[in-house]
Length: 437
Image 1 (cartoon, rainbow, N blue to C red):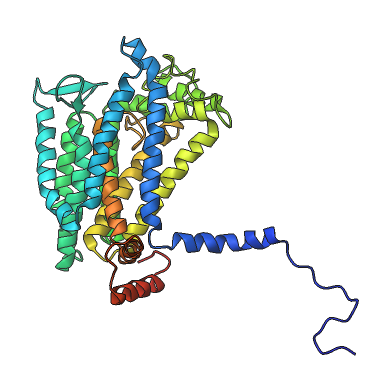
Image 2: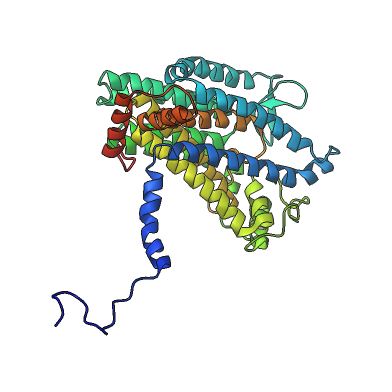
């Protein structure tokens, strides 16, 4: 006789799952637990932006060498300018990450007024400079030029976030007039100044920022659809009235390099010839005069040719992680300004990456916008790095993140947090583990 429930002697015991299978079964839970840690968003934003920028420096050097030699310049010409921009941008990122929220809000109006003033100067004959048919640049001396519309993106994010936060505190966002005015008129002013220079790509990004902030503000579906419909009509008119934009529209999924689709088709050639792991760093063929703008608008194509599918997927994964971390920051905060600003920055970087990569893949018309943090161009890089610094500041100032940083400071010999503060932050983490508001 055997005891009830025991295994008879000689009977086979049930087989245990291999340790590898047990580990695989626990993996989703461990990943979820790791993602819910207080400092995860902070490290993802910082690390993702750093990796994108460093990889971008490498690809700018590789993609621009031949372009520089064609113009009789040193092969490192564009790389050195980009490296200088990264150095300045790193200072801006550090400053933005260290500034408190009230300082960011104080920058909103001066930055907006300065951007509008500079965009007006672009239209003054003798001051504004034309590049590739678009008059959106100002010469600042020597080989350096400034594109004020790039700073207009940052200005719209900060000013719009401050405006919506103040109206939200007064309970005015439930009225559609307060939701749209003066946000829509000021945005239309910025879009009009940019379109005077012919830059359709930047207007698309500013429009995406506007829609993202309206969505976060809780705009009613009818109001949101009305604004979206009006923007679609205006965009359609801008495209139909411009032969150049119509040509770009016709180049979606084109296979013939003729009919003005040379750049779009050769971008596909570059991606197709890269294979799984690419031809090797520096071994691109298309950058030898076949692919226009290999270090700016179409640097993703050169990346695909030299680093292959593995390289392009890595870039996509970094942008996806950066975007998702930005959404988490916007979703966890209780501060309306932080929510709107984090959502605006995330929309800006994500939308610009989608527009650039979609054009290279032949899925969208070529809009002439750089890949954020990756393409050559200091005017685009500097405000983007400051915007990343905003996200880092917001991520590390979450209550749970502040508690975690305080605990680490205590371990390193810094002033320790109070027990009450630590208990409060633990309750915060326990109450909101998923990152949702």
